[in-house]
Length: 490
Ligand code: PLP
Image 1 (tube, protein in one colour):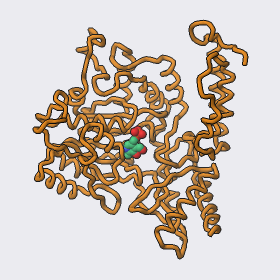
Image 2 (cartoon, rainbow, N blue to C red; image 1 turned 45 degrees about the vertical axis):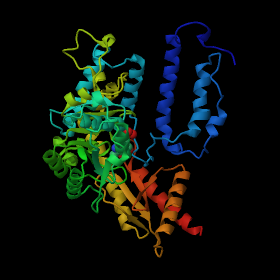
Image 3 (spheres, protein in one colour; image 1 turned 30 degrees about the vertical axis):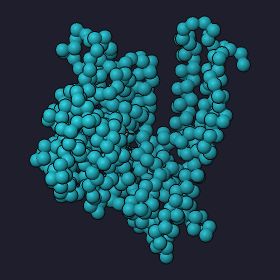
């Protein structure tokens, strides 16, 4: 291949070339969005298939951008699961909206490191402003201070570290936890349906998986506050030190909303840090009619919501709020000489509030999305998702061969096929696994499963920006057609 890049010289791609390929790529993206309905949402590719088509080492001579971009269609597209597809109903699907993509592009162009105010004043101050706008939209109190982390997992890990720092006399920051007979075993509480990121946060912070006590659920998969109270009392009697409760607003499997007001009262009484994992579900509060999902969260010590889950901000951007930034800072602040500046007493240096020093200019895409859609536009889209999910749940409820397996407080519908005359759980699990694989293999929709008490449950999540009623109708039709096919093969 002839080398048309100036790789043999020094410096970057010339601006004229960047302009040409930049335009070409933006055109490609716009075409992709225009034709996305015709692209399979999930790939039929086998593990290792893409790798086997790619060279085992980087090219020595630079290649042309033409060659690189043509491989997107040839190699990368066939190996994609499309998260920006309107028929992606899997996981907590996330949408990269066009304004968000533009913000992301500009962030890469600036390529600033928002570790301190001085390292990029716009980075710090836009983060403060965009997070405060979002806080207001969520109805959180004005004493909630915000920071952007990459993911909810790391946000919750930071919350757990802050909760640990908050325990009087522990001084883990200076002394660590190992080999200290004066440190009791710390206990963290979360519901049986809490996200595994809470366990990961606990194990990262030296709490250990045995230090996480899972609280039983009510019939709607919500934490039972009286069982939380009982667990805390038992643990205190046995010498544990309860230090953190994590409530979930929108659990991953069913979007159950833990009773945060009751949990908050227990935490206040017991002097325990309350963190709320509202990664997906909290975003619903942007619709004023759904504010109640965050009831009680005004009393939390910290809360995380993920604009990259249901607010159309491209992954990754997680918004973390705490009423105790002083404690978070105490847990993480280290300021080496080479990062000090004359402004430090007057500014926020976000590097002091977490593990990461290097911080991308993520606030830009949040700001673009908030400004482009506006509070009203975001709320309208969330309301439409609620309507579509309610419609789908209604179809499930009205069909004799399907059944719903959990309440639908938000836009995740948990259901399964339950053909007449088949009641053995193992058989039903097998039918539903095959049904999921069949609809996913069609390339026309994508769903995932979970287990509730050992039962295979199919989850259909309506939260994609581009999902319309026609997509949900088509998904429902496909589920019924594929169930017939699955049942025809005995
Ligand atoms: N919390 C909940 C309730 C989730 O559902 C998820 C992921 O789906 C997470 C946390 C983790 O989110 P992230 O991928 O941003 O770490």
